Length: 119
Image 1 (cartoon, rainbow, N blue to C red):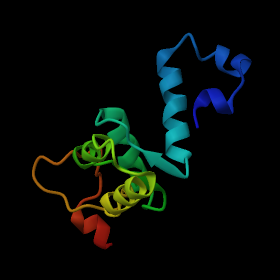
Image 2 (cartoon, rainbow, N blue to C red; image 1 turned 120 degrees about the vertical axis):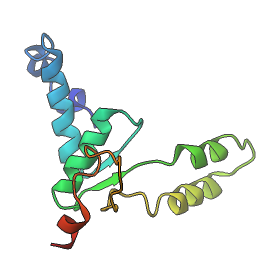
Image 3 (cartoon, rainbow, N blue to C red; image 1 turned 60 degrees about the vertical axis):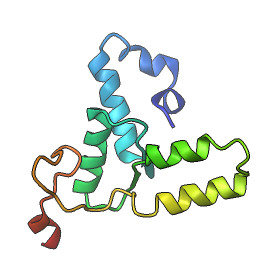
């Protein structure tokens, strides 16, 4: 779902003059969605996943494994059922749940330290 699907052209007209306002709308749509699928590793997507994690891990966030997915996309003989199975198996552990932090870990993507997760 995008902001264009949720609001009319007239409703969005006032926001079009301000790029930051459009980004804020994108942020809210992604933050409040039932499921968020990260499509690239940019700061915006990391901030969304981090905010969703901080809000209690109740919202599913999927961080696709592009390396493993590229193998599936590159196989012209793979059937749909096999592709779906590969996607499900590959991403079972990539659902935005808490991850242990380590030095130089991206704080935006994982704002919870191990001690906060245990509280």
